[in-house]
Length: 384
Image (cartoon, rainbow, N blue to C red; front, side, top):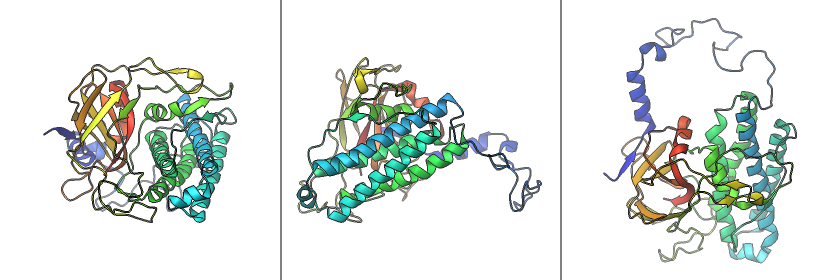
């Protein structure tokens, strides 16, 4: 088999069978599952975090909190700028030619207004010490490319928060951030609909680490106010998927007559990609300057490249990196499903790939253990 898929359900089953029974035996419940411990308040089972009468503190409680929230704030600022920039750059006629009406354009404008709220929220949590809005650069030239970039940017913005949300010391701040990132998840789905893609082709939305998200975001930031706090997460060398499927044409040229104009949903007769597809990669060497004022440098602690890690849904799946010549190589898009036969394909939707030196076992909650093994990436891959 040319790939290895780690399925979380099987992992949990194995852990449960290997661990002492007391670890998984809720001693305060009887055989029927009824609570036996005294309830702290009426209709409130014993346990949980932050459920007593102590007032919540909606502030960072650690350096980890501050740096994670400040990274999220930088993400909100670029989304606000991006949505306004696209609306200003392209004419009404440009949008109409791409199948987008005045109502569609207003929805993008409203999403920009949502970003004002999200940036204000995180800025307040950081008590005014967080990042201020920067100057950005974008690579798109058409409305369709603008929409495609929006759906990719909101994908890694959403996934970047999922990756650290449950690790925050401040559970109160995590609650507020969850309520904002839920909106961003809906934005990402809307941009997929604008692009004529199936809106939600997965069972689970994946998380990525802060360093993965920062690697994806950093190249688009040109300059920032001098008082912006330095971002401490790692910048990995850039990865490019040279054979990434292109969802931007209104009619998919490889499938005669298939309409990909905006719609609530479109079920393609042929997917953008499928298991067994050869995917080609190039990547940079470490030591490149990146992001605003060239003030960050890419780095890696990994050894020689050997694998491609595919992060999607609950899974990190590895395939062999083949045909390695310098900083290029190829691999094969893996198959596999999340929970076994007749369930969701593991690799589907807008997801993430990276080059690694080994194939360590990781799960959604400890994905940061993959960071030391990343040679380059992540890159966004348009799968399924």
